Image (cartoon, rainbow, N blue to C red):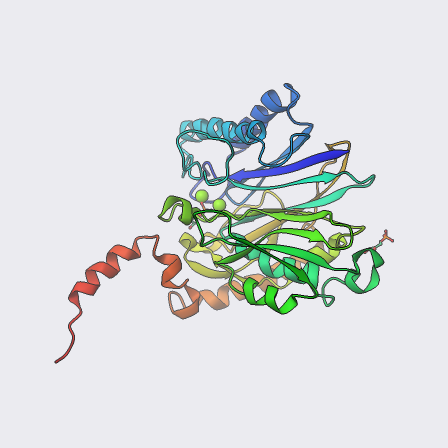
Length: 368
Ligand code: 13P
Ligand code: 13P
Ligand code: MG
Ligand code: MG
């Protein structure tokens, strides 16, 4: 059976700063999707969750990727959410809805979207990743390790179904006139893939395919909000869908690289470097508007119907990881604004620092 899994996420307002959405806001979004998606037969199933201040609408349906009915449903749910966010006086109400009117699909309009059309396996399972206070390049390292490095993905050695490796579709997100993409396969092009993926702000994994079966394995939202808005409007806070088991990495293999807590862009005002902390679903944000966080909810699906999620980072092992990541966050925060603790000017130039630099520029004098 052909099935499309879509996750569309947005920040349309949160309690007490950029912390977490209100329960009422989540309920309103959920109810909207139920009334206009389930009852009208547009979607097969849905699930609402939050990560930091972002709400993710997960949907299964039969309409394919980039479908205007599905995208409009999510957009309208977020518009309805924005109305409630304003009523409640939530912070940043409608933050990620960058355009006034919906047109076609949500790409380039603010919300992040990851989708895949699949042939549903008899025991189909996948993981929904949702990150807050960071950008889509945050998935580059963990997905590279989870799909291309046998040090993390033992299946690359042990499973005949994964023997041929995986194809990476990588997007140049600096190219805003259209989707500029390259296809490279691991292990053949491993060093080329690494050369691109080291630059998390420019080159971002968009899709991954099994080279053994041709099936889609992963889909990542690639939105860079500052490229759309031309100014800082909040961080991109990317979502991703990853199919697991069988021809794909085991769930634990794709989770394993998140134990690194690697340093990513984001954190306070989207302008800093911080370690990515694996958190339970629906976790709030705290220290220095961070640290950057990622949740992982695993689902099984039958005829498009979702089970309840297994909250993959809600397990004692990850408590220890979170302690380590907290230490990394404190370590880099001790140097405040200095050097690599803040993002380079190219990333900050969409924010208020542009005005400051202009003013200072006029005060410089060249000595005779
Ligand atoms: P089970 O034997 O529990 O199905 O696990 C198989 C496996 O490959 C785990 O990575
Ligand atoms: P969000 O992008 O999650 O709204 O965070 C914005 C911010 O500036 C936090 O300090
Ligand atoms: Mg916010
Ligand atoms: Mg956010």
